[in-house]
Image (tube, rainbow, N blue to C red):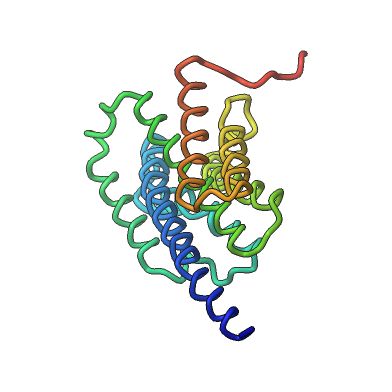
Amino acid sequence: MAAGNESLRLTTSRPASDNASQLLFAADIAGTLVFAIEGAMAAINANLDPIGVMVLAFATALGGGIIRDVLLGALPPASLRDYRYPSLVLGAGIAMFFLHHYVRVVPPTLIQILDAAGLALFAIAGTEKAMLHRMNRLVAVLLGTITAVGGGTIRDMLLAQIPGVLRYEIYATAALVGSICMVMARRIRLSTAWSGIIGAGVCFTLRVVSILRHWNLPRALQ
């Protein structure tokens, strides 16, 4: 009877695990595409050569996830084991290099909104992967935030800029709040999908509203 109960638990838990893995992969791939495009455009705006465009696309799209996987001990990192990640980044970088004249006409606000979408997707992907690795809630939130902002931080450092995460814009804060909301949703036993939707929705909404209404975090008085 005990063996039967154990078998039942394994059978019923497997679909939930599969759903979590599918959500993680979908969010990771979508966020990778958005950030690869953004990284490539940042390189083009900085007048870098094709190699520079590829380097910044890779760093922006995959840097946060690699940092997350290294901290989790999930080695080699998923983006290096699965050919789809570097292939997607390579394709996005090449496309941006040849089509950047068309992308330049896109309003900056729309670019920022797409960046907010990437931020939200990476925040929930990092949080979910941390929870799949049995990390406590605090660590899951921190790794979700690191996944979301890590690539952009590396990009800014390569461009000799102060990373956006260290400035007063509501950016890392949005990822942090979104990760917290996802963890809390899982805490009250909402499904993986609904928890991800809530976390991503909160992160995206907070970031977009802060852009449109020019919200900033307070700075130290000089």
